[in-house]
Image (cartoon, rainbow, N blue to C red; front, side):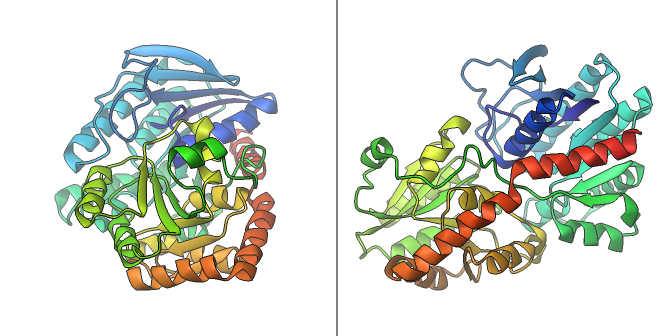
Length: 406
């Protein structure tokens, strides 16, 4: 089978959508399928092109058997609705143009949350008479409104109309949560074409391990209980509340909060930590994807946070599964929903009220002080990882492709 996949994030970027697409594509290649990914020059989230790359009109490289086509786009940092929209639209246009010159695929896939990428996949499917798959990773534009970056109005209504148009035109919709599927059915989308393939973890790369000694020394973490937030520092993550928790625990010199990554709110968070003179906080720059298991090894507990907005009840952060792969206890601070059910059903962590620094402080201390609880959560986390292996998820998605391509 020949698969053409459009995504604006791909390695060496290490965020969740880049990892999902790459790890799925690797499995498809292993099974003998021809995979081409159309993407941008790597630049997320700072909006700066990575070393070794340039924002060219068209370039081609091979990554682990995947044919990767990169196109020129308008590049900006991951902040500001207007400029980011221009970024998205430029990739939608250039991705479609590049796709016209690719060999005729058996299936064409576009991934959200921003659906100008999906628009390109749909248009290519029309021009090439091939089925189109909408991979739904976020309910966009509703998620943009939820973080305060967009208000109700003509723009929101127009984007919502395009969203529903794409749902109806897709031969299949692959949602990353069951909640998304339920939402789409409630909107009148045909249930028979909506599938669920949740995120997962590459268990060959992420597994329980000793703390990396070199990085422990580098970041001054020897003898510390490390609460790690690893991922995008964005508008949706309420990370300022975690800093408030660190402030509540400033008297505990044995507990350190480590933030790893970049994003629209990172500089603001650094300023907040400096203003509060938080000696129990470390900020680590975004790391190459291949370094992430070493980074995760520093953590004693994984902290996953989102704003207290009802929309995020339907979200399952991919960091859950990487945490499981590393065998880490998890503290989940987001509205109760599908993600919290996973944590409760697997017994892999504690769920606390989102944006509540006092409750978060209590959860950190509980896991730190209760070694029996910590060991139980850690074992349950590691045991759960295989159920969410990326290999199994890639196989499910491939079956969907084969069904609609036949």
